[in-house]
Length: 115
Length: 114
Image (tube, rainbow over all chains, first blue to last red; front, side, top):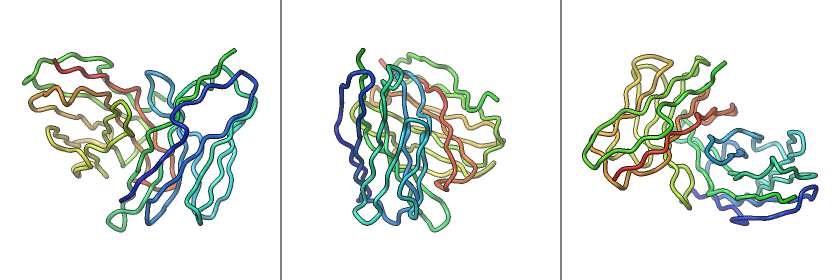
């Protein structure tokens, strides 16, 4: 069964600290992996998209890594800010029906950054 | 650009009532979809459309109808609301389904069925 598992479920860190969020997936065939940020009461916003051949991709203080062999991804946040408090969702795209992709969503990691 | 616009933001329905959740995008995206987000669960696909006049079911389609008469609009209809449909609903659009292109989400509609 296609699944996306994220850990930890929740995380509290102090402002200025770094953190790493984990994502494991069992989606096949794999198309790409995305990380989204979802602020409370808002829709998800894309941070990164990585294809099979990409090992790392950065977006400002956010750096995502992908190991397609072990089917693992991580999202590293550097020098956290209060505005980083949000849920971070790992999403894997797979090819269904040959021509149409589909998105499998993880449950998210809820990050709280404290002053 | 407005991106993806959903209305209303909040709605309370009584069991058995019907309503339509509106979704409009101004990016000329072919692919649009509806998801529901429930506590402790990832977003789940309800219905999707790959272009005007073409719709298909996702993972949890029961109790919902959709239509796609124009590229811009993709309304979601609840036929007879049930408490199990209490959820936050998100509409999304992208150039192509699941491809290496960004999916844009609306702000969400929080629906409560009593």
